[in-house]
Image (tube, rainbow, N blue to C red):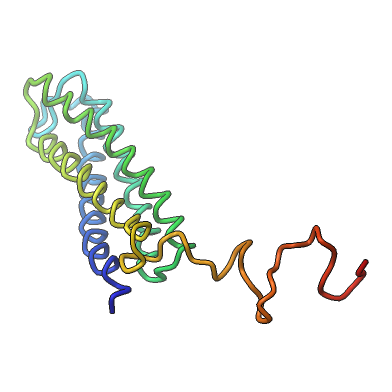
Length: 184
């Protein structure tokens, strides 16, 4: 039971982030569509000079975040070091793009002007996601500190240091062939 502490903490956060990223994709695509069509006087759309950049990075963060959560769901299901690599790598990329969108949201708030309610809600979701995605990323890497929080990076059941059933190491091919064939 102690092996699932990290999984039990990461799974609800993964689901929450997935829902929030789906909402971000919907809001960002709606706002970007109306912004491209020139309907900035439409209720809920207006913005300032930072709005087009913010919308592009928000929709990019949303799409990458959803894809990251799919890899994260696979890792939560398998809970092994090899699935951790894919989940952690995609989570880092999703957090980086979300952090860029977070910076643009802060710039858009700082510049001011009239922003519609949908744009303000999108800014809020991006700001919250920047922190929850970082927390999710830290939970994924908690196995580095203790194996009770996750699979970590120290599993030796496969790879160059793995042992065969006889206890002999594999991967020492430069010392001559030790398993049948043309021995020296």
